[in-house]
Image (cartoon, rainbow, N blue to C red):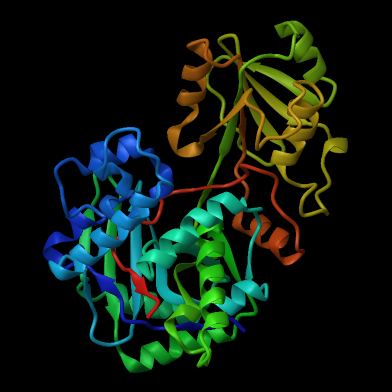
Length: 413
């Protein structure tokens, strides 16, 4: 069973929510955050990227940066820019992008569920990235930013979404990037009980995005439990801040590759090698992969459609079916000599939100030599991989829109 609980959210008053809310800490650099925050002292960047308060070049892991996060978090509360709700509740958070809206429940998700594998992951995490977020959670005593979870569709929860969305929202605004953000309070005791009960009937929840934040929050909760002689399991530190979306609401975008060179090959030699495992068709215009096992290749001003041969994939295997594995094995590894996607400096990755035009631009500029676009994975594939205990190859999923930070914060005490 998946354990979730309502909580007393710490959040901005309605009239300043747009000033407080920000993009997640890990989608922009310190300099970009400094520019976005500008002279807005209410921006959440002063808490999640507090290096912006120091001179340019101050490291984000400097001890004084964490100290400043604590100072700023305290200031936000003292000045009434963040106020805690009087009673525990759930929240409904809607994001609208390109005319499509997805609805997620904001909940306290169980730390034990993550540690015991009931919150399933599909990516490996890096300890140094976990430790950064663990330090931030330790010093602030809060989950400042939510993690992004998904769950199998449930008609009772879908009906509560419909009923709640028909009411007046607490927040409703469009951020500078054009994404709509709407939030409702779910404080009806009967609905709260129904939500808790329906999640309890689910064997698993799934991390869609935010593996490092989830791991960090869970490990800090585990530390707190081990150091609390009066631990009961009901304390707030036993839960982490999560937004949980029904799987059918989510759209996974493509996550594409650009490579600096052809590993010593000419265009003709490279295409000949590619043709050993793919059918190649030159296209007159930009080509977007329209189905599983099709790829787009951009090289020397030309687009090509690639169709993988049947012996390159295994549709019965949760990993072997993935196009990210096919392309990694038969193009990046075997032809271009790239064996470690996490560390090789010759390769870079472009989220689908930037479009195929970004691939063309980076190759045409001379920065990169070749680009490869993939058909996006599906939520079903992600869940199948997580259910079998497998791990996705690196850089396989890109979710949009990203969760807005600062709408709700979860305190650990």
